[in-house]
Amino acid sequence: MSPPKVDPRVAKRRAQVRADATRRRRRRLTTVAGIVVVVGALVGLLVSPVMAVKRVQVSGAEHTSVASLLVATGLEHRGAPMISLDRFALAQRAERLPWIEHAEVTRKWPNTVRIRVTERTALGVIGVPNGVAVVDGTGRVLATVKTPPDHTYAITLAPGDKVPGPGQTVKPAVLGAVRILAALSKGLAAQVESVHRLAGSPPTYELTLHGPVTVRLGEATGVQDKLAAAEAVLAAQHAPGTVIDVRVPQSPAVTHTKP
Image (cartoon, rainbow, N blue to C red):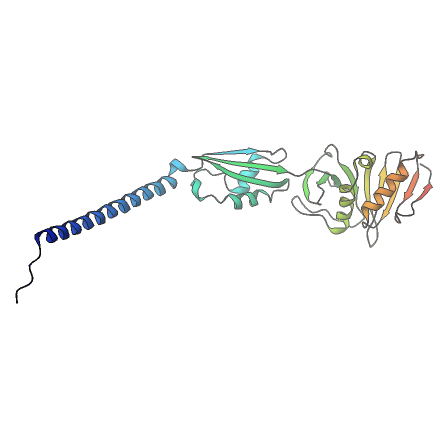
């Protein structure tokens, strides 16, 4: 039996369909190939020297040198591909530096990395050989310098207390003194000269104010209440040598010693 005859018009239509399908496949292949070429070119461009780190801009650093920031982040050597930079990891490395509280790293294409930092605020100073150790309100040691920075308070330690190096935090007994300073109201802070960590355990503390006036705080607990009680007593004028005992803040006691 001979195969059935196909209408020439049907055969022609089938041929057109097959041709159209072939053209569509070719167009898809051409498009995919073009995309691959473009992506490859872009990847090659991103990892090429054209898109490498050539400049690093630093802002917000007053006590931290640009050189130390570059070393901490590994950006002292230029040439790393911009695309490969882990901005968050670089920021974390910068924040390990003693003065840096927060760092933000951004890219400015094609060749610039920006590092914006917020530095810590010096609060107190502790005497160490050849100078003073500067600490912030968290007890972090920021630096060792010859002379105390402006607007800082002296912290006197008890015998045996140690001061760690820059970037580390002081021990709990010393941290109590730092927290007392950090809790001062603006009015009381203007009168304070120093805070003392007294010998003994548990650690106890005293403030020395202009006058001189001594504020006995006892342990570093209920600090806000104790400081508020001291400030209330100080609202009245006191002679030099006044001692204000606020270890029980609800019942502050006032005595006098020879100045």
